[in-house]
Length: 418
Image (tube, one colour):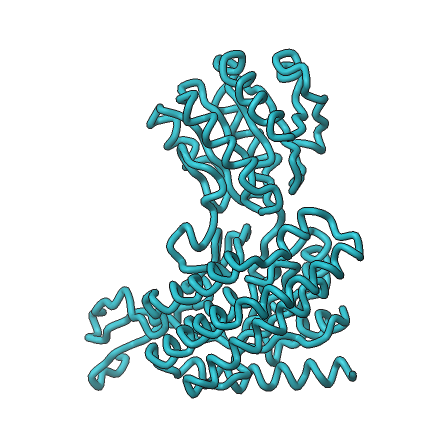
């Protein structure tokens, strides 16, 4: 295969399809989405079978447990994938929405209209559900998508993409509005991230190595997602039962997700009372604790934490723990070590909670809730294209609005400028 020629063809097809999708009405897009969801449910067994082939190859290649967890697609996961597509169909269509219309002294009205970005390239590892989520969100927001999944999920992604294109065609929309790169050659990524004439934005979902490469080589703007070093801070005025429940869920529900808590901070005044039972719960679930000297004094099983530990996204049953003097020290620690993804405070003090919300510099900040809620589905976006740790254009879970921009519009009645 001539990779350069292949990618040029994919890009040209995506650009042409993007124009048709941009002018498609909501009914056509929703019809396609419902057809895609129905096809996914119909082919559940076939999708699981394709995924089993990917998993067998991944295990043989020695992929890490966190990657295998992300790669796995069960019948329940297929059903959730279909439900996510249906939820996107049920969401309001943002395209064409006009806002902020105001009359000017000249008599013209000035406002903004929401419009698609154009062609979106998504580069991701494992997680075959991203193929359906990304396709649905790009379609509903009027964009064409070029999807480049990891080689470890090639069979799953091909199977899902075929169903997406079937649904598009059944609604009279161009099948090329969603294309999955049908090669595992890494050179395809190099072409995708430099095709400015065909691709308007790149959305990477992967590890630090992938992001570092794209930051160095991409000529196309990116909505980037770095790692998820998320924190829970237990405040002086925390409810012990809430703290236990939140830490248990935030750390142990799943280890391989970007919104899993990797660091636990506790106010010194409550540490002796709250940390030992929380530590017992964590170690009982097989979680290794790495803590500061004060933590080790309270929790004999804890290993010494290094400075690197506090900056690490483990994606594993490991957690770093630090005892801090209070809110100021907790905020300073989080802003220094965090990847600016998601942080949570457990506190019954309203003023303290509001300061935490204002001063913690992350994409999602929570009060008395698990960091695991940082997710497009949980936020009511239907699904997400990714979780952006950028500050410009989109931040946090990126749904339909994040895949559009706004242009200025002017409504007049023959006015001319004096």
